[in-house]
Image (cartoon, rainbow, N blue to C red):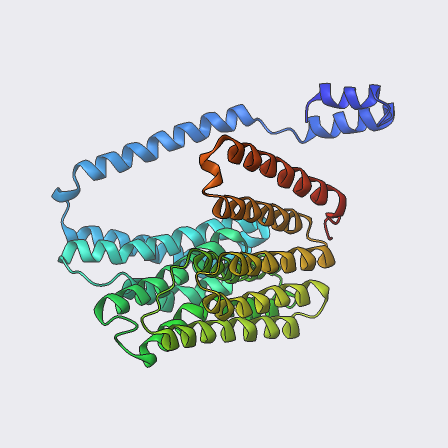
Length: 381
């Protein structure tokens, strides 16, 4: 914080002279040489890029087995450091453990691609991703401390399940494969939502509560994104009607998994925040089959989307999630604007239509800003 800003606060009467002097003294004692660290960082980055360039330029000249051996040695080094020094490193800085864990996991993930390159093998992407989850996910669950590892873990899981679903659909086709295949793929792609009750149950019992909080939030975001996308698809009328019973059954199964995950989260993480998070996930699950039932119905499908996000806003207001409330208000405003353009596509060809659309956009934007400022809760502790 700059001394000029602190002095401005003092002149404005926000802080007294003693507070001003105390803040300036504290900032001076705890100042970080940002410029110096930037120089060191640039130098380290230049060295790293140079090493990468040297290796890349001579990649084909390096024997494949030697490259794999070095890759494995790096993974083993990371695992050994985590096994032997994890507690001491965590006592000094949890971020060191998180960074080492992330790097080790990344080395493990890239090893499969490296192995395929050396031996010229090819396989669906979900197979190495699934193997990586089997080998490394337990380690990440046991030692993860923050959003980098949580994001990497959930990202690989999402990538794996959807690549598996895509591969299965391309090989047999979910509809051509019958009801069993469609339900199986629906179940597989619903699995990431179950991370929410798992993380919620451990969040208050672990010293790594931030890690579990991030996992729960990513799973919640996945559930909301899926329901929002389904409602948007219904409004556009893009759901296939070639086998309505199969598609509806798949959507219903996804919804049932979401409802079960939401109820489990509300039960396993007591307190207002847990109940509201569980309610959002359960509500997102209910939206999925309803979205298919409203396929190609512009206004009802848009209303379903709006109800979903209005429920999220209400839950955020109840739980004190200021940022989530403001996001929900903004999303609702954006959906209303999009709906106005969908319904007035013919009018937009005229000047009056453009004027009306512009006024509507300004009105909805002003209303969203007013609601967000007036009703947004204070950030919960």
